[in-house]
Image (tube, rainbow, N blue to C red; front, side):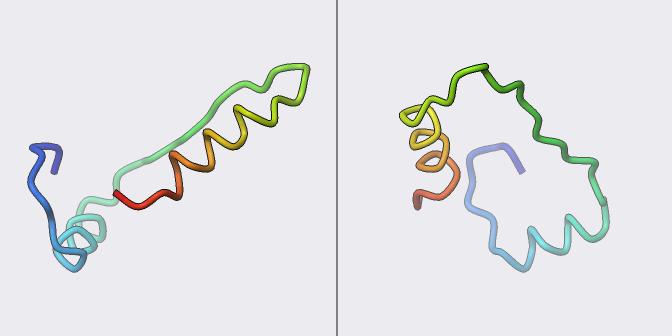
Length: 49
């Protein structure tokens, strides 16, 4: 699924149901709250294409 081709949503969902991969997203936070970093993260996660 990482060959750069577009995968239809149903096909991707079927693959996930069959393979059930262990997916984890973790990060360490800084002592200070960085509004710009937070905005960049949200943009990366939720911007289309």
